[in-house]
Amino acid sequence: MLEQVEGLAEPASPEHQLDLATVYRRHGAEVSRWVKRLWGRSDAEDVLHEVFLVVQRRLGEFRHRSSIKTWLYAITIRVVSHRRRKERLRRLLFLQVAPALDVQQAPVETPLGGALKQQAARIVYAVLDELSERDRTLLILFEIEGMPVSQIMDVLAISEDNVWVSLHRARARFRKIYSRRFGREREE
Image 1 (cartoon, rainbow, N blue to C red):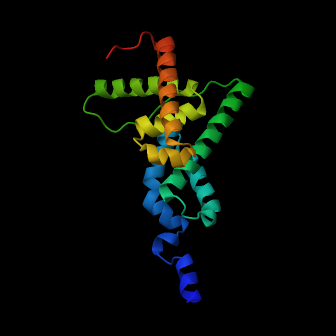
Image 2 (cartoon, helix red, strand yellow):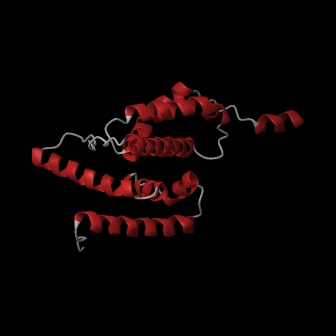
Image 3 (cartoon, one colour):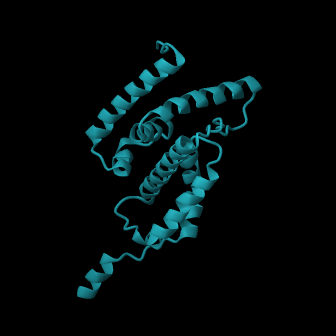
């Protein structure tokens, strides 16, 4: 009987036997999209590689207490936040101007449509860059990624009420920065 109980404690299902190749094959495209959105620049490939280096190093520590996607998103957020802090410090120390934001866009029907989308993306990321990392991450997760509140709770390790309150405050700060930098808010 004890052997049966011990056998149940360690499931042998394929989802519990993860390796880097499997994780990359199943989730690589999604993690790439997350990195591009969180990073907000076209040079996201290096950051993506860095995310999977961390995944490779920490894969043995994954305990299946949350979904693999939640775990991967949390790693992605930490790596991107670390890289953004490092970039900011580098710009301050060396007084380098950051390259213009060049968000990759899917092909569009008209050049005008593509230009308008790029301009909108530049404006959004310019405002997001002025927010705290927490506000920025929260808005990207909820507004751009469309992640449900239950997953955001897991990724950021905060309560549901805290997600909603923080989201409300982050939106208010976003609107304030947008109004200050780009003129009057549009009335809806």
